[in-house]
Amino acid sequence: MKPKKSWREKLADSKGLPKVGEVSGSMSRRWGEGTMVIPAPLEVDALMKQVPRGRVVTINEIRVALAAKHKVDFACPLTTGIFSWIAAHAAAEAEAAGARRVTPFWRTLKSGGELNPKYPGGVDALGKRLRAEGHKIVKKGKRHLVADYESRLFQQLR
Image 1 (tube, rainbow, N blue to C red):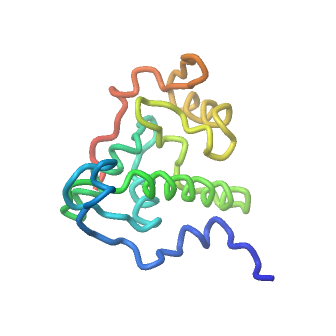
Image 2: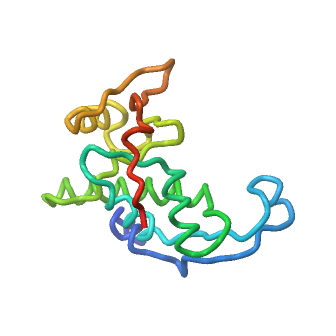
C-alpha cells in the first residue's frame, strides 16, 4: 500500500499546472466565456504568503491576481479554492512540525469576508488569530465574518 502524501507534498505536486485554455461548451454556462487558468498549488500559496499582518484577502482577489499573472479572463474558482485549502493544511502541518514562519492562511477569506470553516482549526482558531491581528469577527447566522473586511483588503497581490 502506498503511503499517504503529506499536505506539504500535495502542495508541491503541480501535476503539470498551471494550464491555460478556452472555456467552452457546458463549462461556459457555469463559468462564463473566455480564457481561464487552472493555477498550480504553489502559485496560490505564494499569493497567500504576501498578505501582511493586519490585512486580509478573499479568494476572489487571489483569482484576479492569478488571471492577471497569466493574462487570461479568469482563474478557475474550484481549483483556486482547493489549492488554498491545501496550502492552509500544509501550513498547519509545517507549524505542527515546529516551523515558525508559515503561510498565513487565516488571512485568506471566502467571498464576502467569511472565515473558511474548512481551514485547520475551524472558525474558532481562525477567529482567534484574526482578532490577535486587530480584526473584529461578527457572526451572521451560521457564518463568521471579518467586520468591515473591505477596508482591510490587501490590494497589492502580484
